[in-house]
Structure formats: structure tokens, C-alpha cells
Length: 411
Figure 1 (cartoon, rainbow, N blue to C red):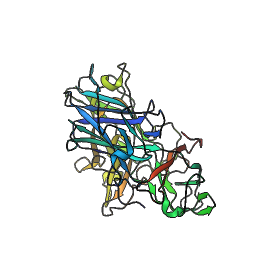
Figure 2: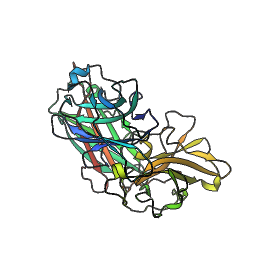
Figure 3: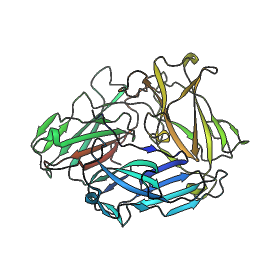
Figure 4: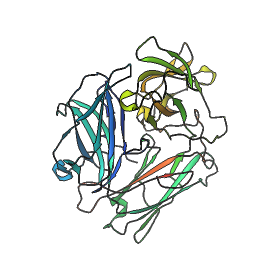
């Protein structure tokens, strides 16, 4: 497993909200573009200071483990070394005022010319010491054919709760002398980084074919379909809203308390697999007309007793798909519940609850106590394949595929 992830998605300025970075016209997607193509990714974010500022951006090439690649930016960027974000709109209609910034990347004067992991850095006044936020994205040069398979585990203890991912690589186009060292693989479940699986070794090697089909290390908790909060309207109370307080600005929206679903059976339903969509029923353009609210989440543990030696987290894009302090729930001893307040823009949100052992920094998220796990749950999996040539100084991204467990198709 990869331990070092030095460069990650982070927000450094508290006024920055609702960062969305995705393939053009698809809010649920990872930001992936093909090398030397016309592919574009959309960047959107709000600054709640409400004052127009000069934001710039740059790209940082990273290796498979998200450490900075040992290569000059002049070798992987064609054009200028930084670009200004020139498109913005002052919010209208919304009671909460903000400036909405947007960009379609890459721009003609700033193009990545190497495949790999990239970190987008956005900062003020062309000064990298005034960093606003960072976001991961990917540039792929498809040199490897990748076939995937989703199945139920054979192990009786896991076959009803986990999902097994298997895949095969055709590396004919690569110069492989030591596949175990030159090829690295990462698998993401629903775009999450906290439970990503990395650094697999092939089970079988047959000429140019690398087969990854072992029972150990290819398993994910199935979880269940995500919970949801419909916040597309602040005028009416949707199904999951318990009450609204409009006396303050931003307004307060209290969702109905959530309880453990671990003992209830599996139920098929459509969800966004942990993503959220910025949208509103009350305006034409949600990006600069959508409003904000302080949304109160409450989780009611069994017997109103906190989890022993475990922390409770919210997972999903709304908390950055990572187990950070922003995702951690706080236990209220007087009420006997876990609570979290998130400032959210109008939209449709998915989320789930997981626990993590307090005294084990390497422990992964566990959904068994809060959501339950089912092998038949519909999930998206993304497989990323990296290659380093014998004399290479960075990891190339040579294959990316995202597939769905329900229909088996690539997305």
C-alpha cells in the first residue's frame, strides 16, 4: 500500500466553498482528460468574501503516490507557467453574496504535455504562498488495454458484504523489463481516496498480459446506496428536511436525524454514488444564482451511546471524499447524538456514515456499524494504471477506466 500522499485535495482559505472539478458537463465524474486531445474539465468555486479577487492557477505533475515528480514544469507544461482565472460572476438572486469563478481547462496557453497525476493549485495575486485550494486531476495517455470484472468474493465470511475487483492489462505497447516495479495500480470506489487500494502485484504474467485476480487485496466493503439530502429548494421543505430557520443568514436547515441502517435489508435505489450536483429549482443558473444554507446533520447512535474507541465521519464529495477533520462528526453528550454543520450550496447531495478506530492511524473506514455492507450494492470503481520507463523520472498514467457494478459498463 502507498503510504505517502503528500499532495492532496485541500482548502486553505475558509471563504472558498463549493469547489467542483469534473469532466465537461458531467458533475459526477473525475476530472480526467486524454493527452493531446480536445478534452476539457470544468472548474467552479465560490469566494464568500464577495469581493472580486485575482486568482491564478498552475499544475503540479505528481507520481503515482502523489508526491511531486522530479521534473521541471517546463518539461510538462506547454505555454506560460501560470494562468489567471478571468471568468467570474457576482452572485445574483441569492441572499448570501459571493463571487463565482469558473474555467475550462486546459487553456490554449497552458497545456499539460505529459500524462500522469496532476495537482491543480489555485492562489491569489500570482503568489503561490497565498494558496487558496488544491484539487487532483488526471491526464491519461492510453497505452494499455484494460479489461475489468466485478464479482462476489469466494470467502464465505465476505461474500455477502464485500465486492471483488479483478482486471487484466495488455501491456504490448510498453517496454517492460520488470513489471512488478514498472507498473503501479490504484483503485477508487466512488471517487473516494480514504479507502483507495494501491500497489497491486500481478497474480499471473503471460507474455504481455498482466492478470490481477487474487482473492486478497482486491476487496472493498460493498456499503449500501447512499443517503441523500435534496436542497435544491429553500422555499419548500423536501422529504429529508425536518425544519428551517430563516431568521439568520445563511438560513439554517435541520435534516431529520439519521440512524444506523446496518440491521435493515438491502434496498435498491438510485443515487449519485456519493457525489453531489449543484442545482436549484428556483433559478436559471445554479452556479451564480444558487443560495447557501447552514445544513445540520444529526446521527442518532444505538442507545444514544457514542461508539467505543471509534470516531464517526461523513463520507462523500460534500466532505471531500476523505476522512478529514471537516468530515468528523462531534458527539453531543446532552442530546446523545453526533452532529455536524456544513455550509452547503443549493443542490442534491449524497452522503454516508463510517467509523474509524481512534488509536489506529492506518485503519480504514468501516461502514458495518452505520450503513451495513452488501455485495449487490451499485458502486462505481475507477482503475488507474501507471508506468515508469527504465530511465523515466516520473510515473506515466497509461490507462483509466471507470465501470459500474450493476451494469458492468464503462462510464
